[in-house]
Amino acid sequence: QRGDVLYAINSTKVHGWSVEQMKPLILGPENSEITMSFQRVGNQVQGKCSFNVTMIRTPVDSVPVAPHPRGFEIYGAG
Image (tube, rainbow, N blue to C red; front, side, top):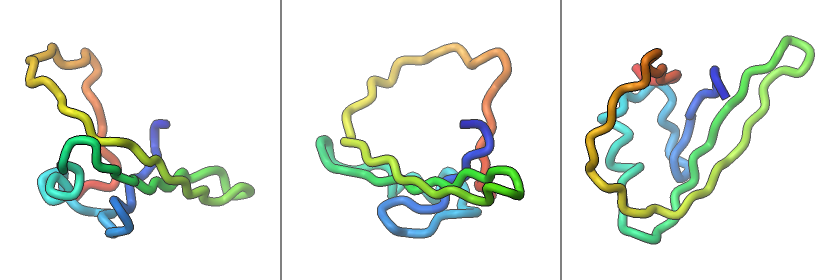
């Protein structure tokens, strides 16, 4: 969701890291697990909510794609 902040990868705190700094933690052997921990900031009544997303790494084809017309944003990256 827009505004979610990635703050850990496999329990290593990465809040404020650049994408290049995170890359070695994200890339890994095919079929290995990766757990990304996010923080979702709610309103002042609800406060912050943390959640984990666990995925299995799969190969990604290097196929050029057209950029999204609105671009994208990376939150929490320095």
